[in-house]
Image (tube, rainbow, N blue to C red; front, side, top):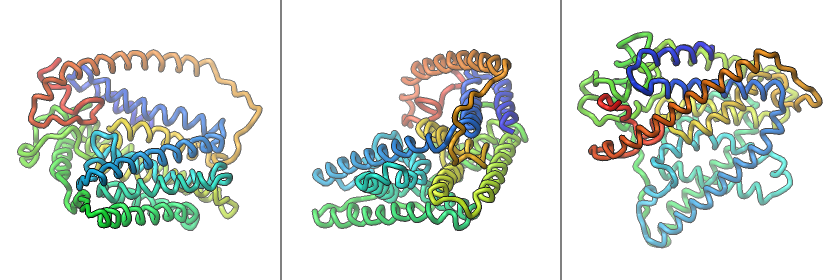
Length: 422
């Protein structure tokens, strides 16, 4: 199924007239290939436990450090009596919605940092992880990250449907983070500003689509033009508007829905295969639940449920945001999906110790395939470099336009390649 998806994505490069038509298909094919290759190796030959232990430590440390630095921004805003704290937090991202995508991936995994070996040895570590997670929850509430909230809820429901009561150990730890995050929100956004006479303004919680409905209508109309195939990679950036609503609105680098964007550019056939892959994932999870049975340990349940909620939440978030376009989200998602695929590949031993003392033998064709893939990767990277240089040359032209914000459609912005630029 993965080969079919990758082949169809690559095939759509032939119908594009862009000089850089291989860049984005290569990106997605490489993304899928890394998940299958490294996830398969982890699931069959290595111990996930030995991998998840350091990963959970790194995750907890990064979340705690980012949270502590965010409190610095909060303190400076208090001292400066800056009422628009939501303009500064979350920090470090071109757009706070790209941070919320990262939060969707990472927050469900944070309970793993509360059950690792370091957590059993150090109460200070547990305190730092809980405080860091609470600050992240507070920033989600502060920035009105609806996509993250809804996606985490959907991911939790999916995990409950699959694992039933086995999700409770993870849910208790995640509930602790939510409770502490709510307390932080009351104290940092309510009590502290009131005591200091500062009226903080968070982002307004909108109940509308924030302009997404117009983009979704346009992407759907575009997907029907060459049904069930698409119009080629990055066709969304250069296509002529099809709906009156989109023609009269501000253009954007993506339609805020990965599935509609893929349907428009790569066709509904690819999207149906992707949904079929989701169904296969759910089937494997049900099988894994049955294999775990009543003998599963609480720690294993937390690991499995945490990774499942992370992936399910991100896939849900992709329906309303550019989860698989923004670089930070894709990089973090790559590691999470590799671990998830490893669990699905070898459900009977995914959470057990790896086989030690075994030397695997690989046939000669494996090395031939590795050589071919390496050569194709070098060719693709040379195209990526040329694409980047073209965007550097195009950037001054882009900045002259009325809407000169950076968009995440590869590196700089979303309106390149232009139809009038080679």
